[in-house]
Length: 152
Image (tube, rainbow, N blue to C red):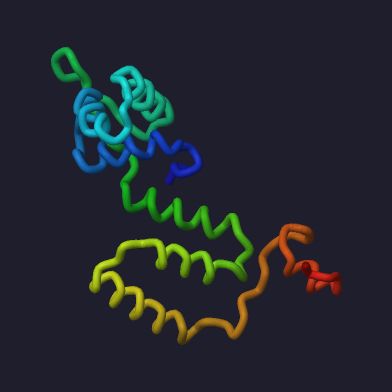
């Protein structure tokens, strides 16, 4: 899969969310859906769609005097990639805290919570006593501790 997340700006994510939901849509429909929250002019929506087409994340299909747009990447794969990228950007010893913060901030259903509890119980069976740092020296405090320096 392409490195979608690193290619998509926050505004482009909003467009992609509409396209994923609609499956196939026009720039006018995207603009109408986002207009209330984003207050974008039609030209802004068309510019963002154009960028996404250029990046290969949307494909076009001519229909009459307008184009239909559809995603070339799935929402699920894009979300999974976004989450992986977040965890890859921080020290592995901080993954648990980052996930805890995401859970704290997220609105979760009872079903979501049960799934998370089940996953945590399964993960617990093979979890190490302590997570090892995966950073290069100088990227976090863990390496300073390993090298015997003060980790303030």
